[in-house]
View: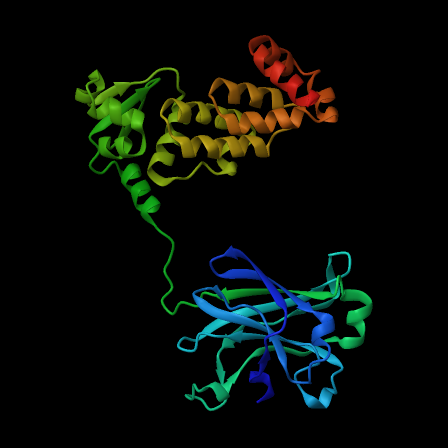
Length: 354
């Protein structure tokens, strides 16, 4: 058939892999050269890989069907891997002369299965049907609106649908370890804070925190103790940290109430103390989500105190905005910040001056 014929004309392909299952292909076609092609002859892209399959874009500058009389540009996606079926979504649009995507010439397919066979189990070359649009764009529009430096640029996006026949649920190890913590099954040590006792498993704590590992399995006195009294940490903070150690989860906002900012500041401090880096960043994100001109100074002081550079940088950027600084500078928290951390004020001045 005509659709299987391709011309080796000038066409430049650039691929941008967004994910292992999705890709954008920039397909540039020499317009002056290809507009002389016979109807039904194509210029094709380089073969590219996405979702573990091989693909190719095929462009018919004068259309893929004789009955359209060469009035349309056709675009098709060809599945080059013949051994495995796959589902994908195909999108294509033209770039205008300003290099912007064109809203009027944009096509998006539904979920489409490749390859489609005319005769059921037949898998020969003649049976394969490509997916795309025979009337993608009128040829008369191309010269006026879409030819830049002699080329037309077509952007094509392909997303492969991972349609596994055996769905795998998310990991539930956090749930089971949380139950282990709640039921105190097999606990071999405890912590006492302000009269409250928390039971735990020495091995779990050591596996999650290098500080606990050094304390509980090293040469420190705690290694031989089954009950440890902690100071300078609130029971609620330790409880939340212990829950995170077992489940990788934070308390829900509904359980924190209006004091959530204070709880996350305390939890960030505990994470720094026990070298729980992931918990530290999660708390930093929670604090950043709630930052305002009224809270930024307190948040910045927390970040500086507990060496959270990511949160500190965000707060300094926030204060570098003139409107934010004018409002925050009149708060008591900002005055305390400057008094306690003059180096932070110097960093802010440097940021504003650059």
